[in-house]
Length: 75
View 1 (cartoon, rainbow, N blue to C red):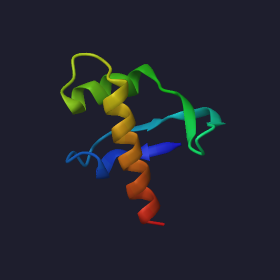
View 2: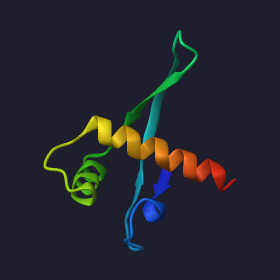
View 3: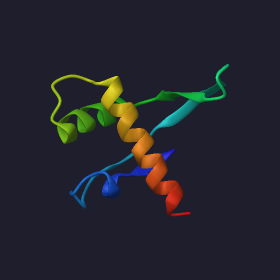
View 4: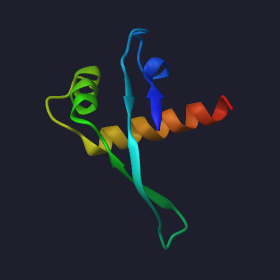
Protein backbone atom coordinates (compact mmCIF):
# COMPACT_ATOMS: atom_id res chain seq x y z
CA UNK A 1 0.00 0.00 0.00
CA UNK A 2 1.51 3.32 -1.01
CA UNK A 3 0.00 6.38 0.57
CA UNK A 4 0.51 9.88 -0.75
CA UNK A 5 -0.20 12.03 2.22
CA UNK A 6 -1.56 15.10 0.44
CA UNK A 7 -5.10 14.44 1.68
CA UNK A 8 -3.94 13.90 5.25
CA UNK A 9 -1.68 16.94 5.59
CA UNK A 10 -1.47 20.52 4.38
CA UNK A 11 2.13 19.96 3.28
CA UNK A 12 2.14 19.29 -0.48
CA UNK A 13 5.79 18.17 -0.25
CA UNK A 14 5.06 15.26 2.07
CA UNK A 15 7.21 12.20 1.46
CA UNK A 16 5.82 8.91 0.16
CA UNK A 17 6.06 5.73 2.19
CA UNK A 18 5.34 2.09 1.51
CA UNK A 19 3.26 0.40 4.19
CA UNK A 20 3.27 -3.35 3.57
CA UNK A 21 0.23 -5.45 4.38
CA UNK A 22 1.69 -8.55 6.02
CA UNK A 23 -1.56 -10.31 6.85
CA UNK A 24 -5.32 -9.79 6.76
CA UNK A 25 -7.44 -11.64 9.32
CA UNK A 26 -11.20 -12.06 9.18
CA UNK A 27 -12.65 -11.73 12.67
CA UNK A 28 -15.64 -13.56 14.12
CA UNK A 29 -17.72 -10.37 14.20
CA UNK A 30 -17.45 -10.03 10.42
CA UNK A 31 -14.81 -7.30 10.48
CA UNK A 32 -11.18 -7.67 9.42
CA UNK A 33 -7.83 -6.59 10.73
CA UNK A 34 -4.67 -5.81 8.78
CA UNK A 35 -1.20 -6.48 10.10
CA UNK A 36 1.16 -3.89 8.60
CA UNK A 37 4.91 -3.54 8.33
CA UNK A 38 5.43 0.16 9.08
CA UNK A 39 8.92 1.57 8.40
CA UNK A 40 10.66 3.53 11.15
CA UNK A 41 10.92 6.51 8.80
CA UNK A 42 7.14 6.61 8.46
CA UNK A 43 6.66 6.37 12.21
CA UNK A 44 9.01 9.31 12.75
CA UNK A 45 7.24 11.37 10.07
CA UNK A 46 3.82 10.45 11.47
CA UNK A 47 4.77 11.44 15.02
CA UNK A 48 6.08 14.80 13.78
CA UNK A 49 3.05 15.39 11.52
CA UNK A 50 0.62 14.57 14.34
CA UNK A 51 2.56 16.41 17.07
CA UNK A 52 3.22 13.22 19.03
CA UNK A 53 6.16 12.44 21.29
CA UNK A 54 5.67 8.68 20.92
CA UNK A 55 3.90 6.29 18.55
CA UNK A 56 0.14 6.14 19.02
CA UNK A 57 -1.48 3.00 17.63
CA UNK A 58 -4.92 4.50 18.24
CA UNK A 59 -4.09 7.73 16.37
CA UNK A 60 -2.51 5.79 13.50
CA UNK A 61 -5.55 3.52 13.18
CA UNK A 62 -7.90 6.50 13.00
CA UNK A 63 -5.63 8.22 10.46
CA UNK A 64 -5.37 5.09 8.30
CA UNK A 65 -9.12 4.44 8.36
CA UNK A 66 -9.73 8.03 7.28
CA UNK A 67 -7.11 7.76 4.50
CA UNK A 68 -8.64 4.53 3.20
CA UNK A 69 -12.17 5.95 3.24
CA UNK A 70 -11.12 9.11 1.41
CA UNK A 71 -9.20 7.16 -1.22
CA UNK A 72 -12.09 4.74 -1.80
CA UNK A 73 -14.42 7.66 -2.42
CA UNK A 74 -12.05 8.87 -5.16
CA UNK A 75 -12.29 5.58 -7.13
